[in-house]
Length: 108
Image (cartoon, rainbow, N blue to C red; front, side, top):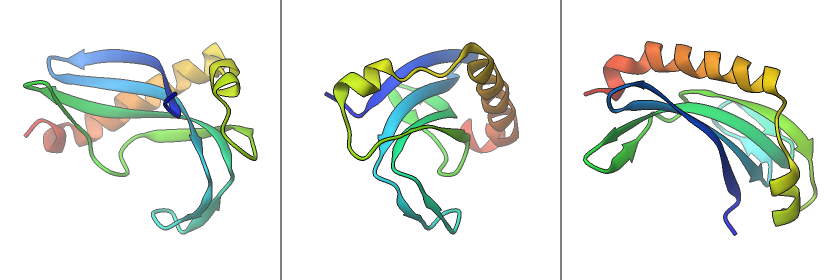
């Protein structure tokens, strides 16, 4: 099974959506942020452009939140891990803000 699970996809405008996913990450060094990420399940949201059946996004655009520590991936755990409604709504708002900020670059 895939190591990602879609939580929501919300249309912002024609060809632009924000997508929320729960996924498993092995953690370790994060060269983008300069920090060290924990191993476990994360919830992320990012703007995605859909045009002619192709999906594109900007690296570093969007937000993510650590949900649960885990030593290794489990299909059962991925199915069980679910962010609460308040977090989903907060992440949707952050995703919409990221889409607005990066709209000009995404919609080229």
